[in-house]
Length: 167
Image 1 (cartoon, one colour):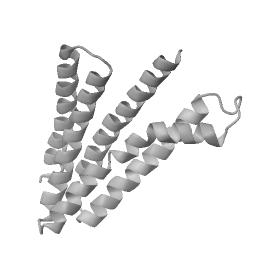
Image 2 (cartoon, one colour):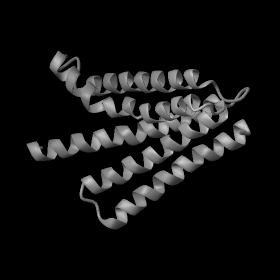
Image 3 (spheres, rainbow, N blue to C red):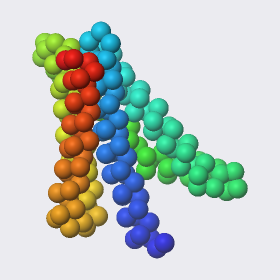
Image 4 (cartoon, rainbow, N blue to C red):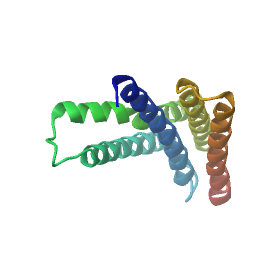
């Protein structure tokens, strides 16, 4: 793999992490409302950020182990590189967290804050998927299919939240 191919692969990984992290954030919001109503915005922000960070750490671990450790020595440079590449997974929890905090700051209910976070997570997921398809030079058809597929996945999470949580 030459330098250009490696760079393209790293970029795909970053976008993939952001798409995955956004879907994870939507799932956290949906799952947090399953019993007794939505959590308060501070609780929701904590759940979102902590879940994103834990999954990020897990992905870093998996990438380091699967890349040859212990046969290949574990170095700080390698660990930092993998952590940077996987960081979009954790970052994806920030926009929904900000949406929940802003809704709360505007005096909206916990339910409205949770819906704001969920909508932002789904919109982010679609945006990241479309951006990834565009950046990797995909055809217009693949860009549209990527957006629609991720919108369907996000709406599936919304439907589950509505059915399971009832609000």
